[in-house]
View 1 (cartoon, rainbow over the protein chains, first blue to last red):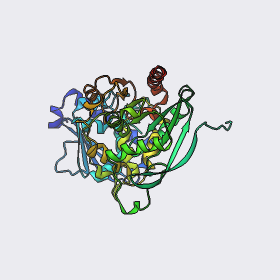
View 2: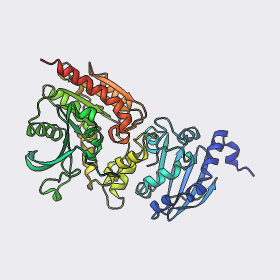
View 3: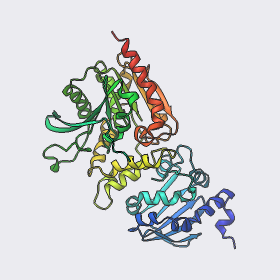
View 4: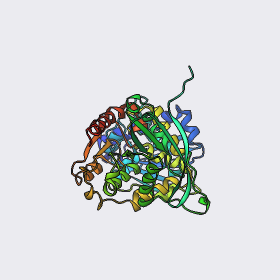
Length: 143
Length: 287
């Protein structure tokens, strides 16, 4: 059943949220990513416009991806951007300005909120994780 | 593979910088017009290894690359353990002049990237007759900060990892993985607080917005080249700066970011060779 938030979600929001919904499988296929994030336990919320996605990470492995709305659910940190910006970010070879999360935060197109210590302490891991939907043919902002 | 040597020679230069003895690591290759290359903040001279080994460059240029104190193989000065490293405009400017003097270089070209691109603007404004030409890579008189530098040096976040992670997105996605990772390795292996100390110059002390209008390119030609994927020193930052400098020549480089010489050497080569050729040709007609 569509949630109240879903009913308001635009087509592009739904399209981008669907791509992030596969983060668990994409991360599971990348053992090296889990190695690099092995000290990270975090509940990351990715906001695609009005759609919240909860990414549960334990010892660097994505153990669940759930779609909101969430009621009184805390997160370690939240990364939010409008769906249009995320869609451009997820292109295999994004245009300048959309190629990196920090480029987007500098331009005001994305925001990171919450406890930033685990975010900064695992920055490359986080950036690589959210870039996984670009696919193997895209190198994007991945290190 | 067959073992081979590169033509780079590395030596240590003992000299005084900012009134203190230093032991500076200097690499060089080639012969001809001296070309001093200045590395980015938090990195070292390895960034220019492809310039040092490019025969098309070294047949006409004596390429000289030094690791700044605290960087690469140049140790910090005696007593460093009791101070916080902070680069300033004055120290950086004098360092370039002192190295050129110590090596008895006559009218060198200076090519600097990022903080090196910033300091060449000050060299152009303050010491134009000392140089044959100046090249600013990822160069602007000022850039908008985009993170709190306190993250770079603290006990609960790994300094090398976070420095590398922050700058990783400043490279073009098209740049080869091997070159991007090599570029990041220098950030991962920098000393604690060194990147942050360089950014003291870049963000706080080295605002040159009121300085660049004094640059006279008839005394010293100025070339500015910026990668389209550099969101730290954006093409707009470079163009805005160049608009204040009559005669500055700007190139916006496709499929390159903040580290053109190391993130994609072959792509950068297509842009820098014509600039070096132009400088060389003009030099041939000098008095």
